[in-house]
Image (cartoon, rainbow, N blue to C red; front, side, top):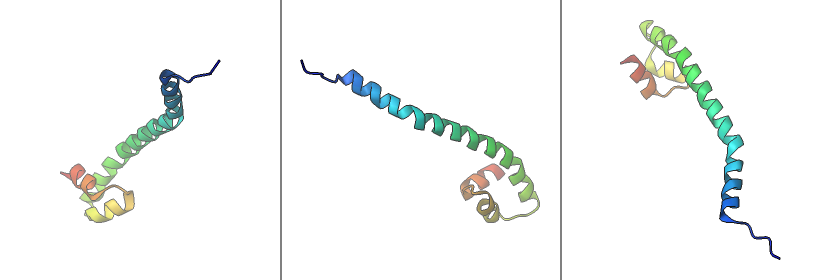
Length: 72
């Protein structure tokens, strides 16, 4: 008797392999959202203090487009 692996079993294994990295990715996305929520008012205040957008971007790791969007 031959042990055959079914397509359903292969799909189940593929999904299981995704779970750990997928959970970590979702956790990191939540952390990034939290940090951005913390950063946004600080970016606005820095801009009011006339800190150049390019410097804000360099210090925070935000893209210049994101900084500009937050300030518009």
